[in-house]
Image (cartoon, rainbow, N blue to C red):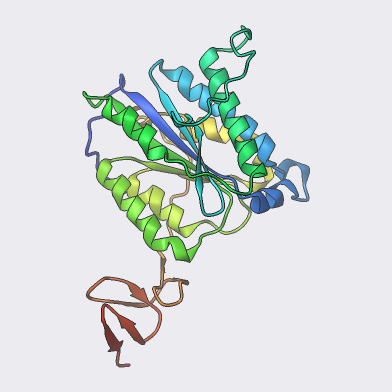
Length: 284
């Protein structure tokens, strides 16, 4: 069970803001695309097609649903949709003439695909500030009828060097009552820190079965499409066991047993260490 309590009232009529964060590490996606069996291969291009259908399904559930798509790349984040007002619009010229597709779906699909293509082809990535547009959506909701949630598509392993920043994000989301969902697309071990994120914030953690990678869209629809109100009445798939390992401050390793500083609560692997402005030597 999650340790998050409902700090906001969720109603069936509430609109939903889905913030989709896509791990675009080309190395790990290359590993996912080169798996030996055919059913286990999932190239980034195919995963994006599945994600586009998922995003359109989310927008189709309610007319006032919103979505924001962010790419997590090498040391930077890139806003894929919506594009910041100061940036280029990237609207396709034949957009209005295509009557076979709902215009909002077409706008989202075109912008996400075009921006992620530019992201993978460009070495120098300009800074983008997704929080501005997300804050604009939430601040415009004076009555509190827009409920936010985050979905992370992860293919990379944990980085202990990011442990403190990840925990800060987790506790901020918990305080705001925003669940963090995790879909792990990797044959490696589960990501300990993202497991903790979904558990603490009341989200769902799902590791895509390696032999069912072609069913990526089905797992997205079943596990992550229901909104926060509907989840109260559904039994969704996901991992129940959570690894609560932390990263040590001295070596940035993930540990299960260590020492904790009584001042700053940092986890330490060594008995003798320097922390919180003074040296410590823990007796045996």
